[in-house]
Image (cartoon, helix red, strand yellow):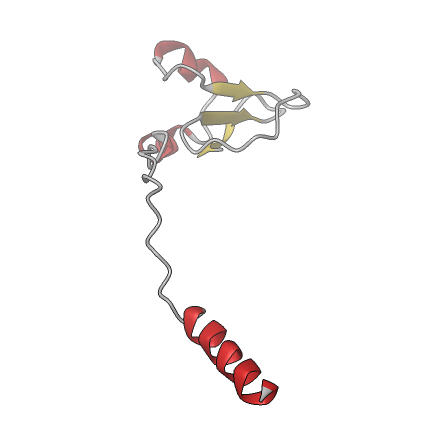
Length: 94
């Protein structure tokens, strides 16, 4: 008698587990897709002094050799790396 009851209960649990998962109601974040680095790639290799005549978004980091910077990743932050020869080495979003 117990066998069919247990089998019936286990079947019910198995079927309940097959219920589709409801879609998440978490809204997608509207994050910027880039920081504008693509448009500035022609500056790579130029002297650091060319940056003086440019306007950059708030939060832009100009990073010199040995400068301490935070390791947090932000796709919306423009970073310009300067090498030891005082030339622009890398421009990216990070």
